[in-house]
Length: 341
Ligand code: WQD
Image (cartoon, rainbow, N blue to C red; front, side, top):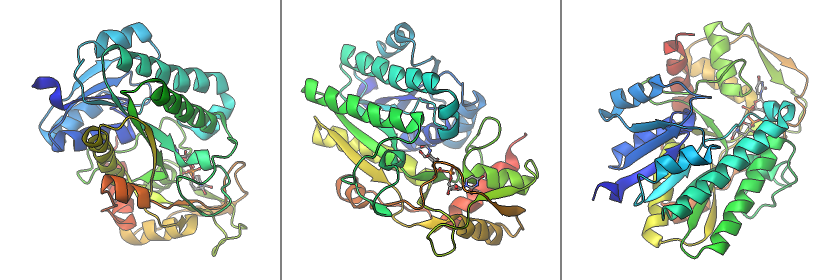
């Protein structure tokens, strides 16, 4: 039946969303994108078609607009699930624009949950973040590690959205969700046709590195080298976006195969910590170039080190990372070189 493989994907033209749409198509699903292109470009849809030879249906819609979302979702009453990426996601920006972040990230989730209930869509895959752990007590975190008080409106919206989804599972006996806590997504599709498209000056390390290598940015500033780590710089868990995308397909299958009726939190990381200087050195080596960088002051709000214990993803989803860090650094650079800035 047409709808038996239909999956709604909000934010499906975005960085992680577009890679997930590619993997959904490759797995035989029929992804339906809902995106208003505020943080993505419509030509990404054409790139997805170039990669998969399938052009996904795309509805240009703001997920805060309940009427517009209902008008779209009513066409897919038998969708087997919904993957919700659409949200604002820059930590720094959220401090400048808290109301926008709460209104969009929480408002759009509530609209999505109402639409799912109205049209009998039972399974939600939600895009959460390791940010919810804050300054964790240990460098390696499991899903049972305490959720700390948020250090930004962005982080607080992720904590709040997780709570809303859990309460929604408790309130409805036919709703199940996976709350996927991403660590640090990097890399791009090996074809070089899709990747990260940051708007304006990048907040995140990887796009800043590739834009510096390309000459768009004069130099990279390493935010602090006096941390209590082997080389003094922060440690993170950098995961290839393709591995992240594959995990979303596995999460959807988990929900369907187990007829899950609760909210399951799952870390998505490599389980390995890498420092900023190690990233820089590896990027230079794998791409045979020198990066212009200097050590500067710490960035307010940065945690010293955090990386994932991802045993639950392996156990529940049968998922482990396939791509190496060097492949991610190579793919990021290949993608950057192809962008017409
Ligand atoms: C990584 C490391 C910086 C830029 C955030 C969000 C998280 C997720 C990923 C959405 C840190 C250092 C960075 C630069 C630097 N986003 N850095 N110079 O802060 O770990 O996580 O993005 O889900 O939720 O919190 O990622 O890439 O900003 O920083 O030295 O110009 O790189 O200090 O140690 P972060 P990041």
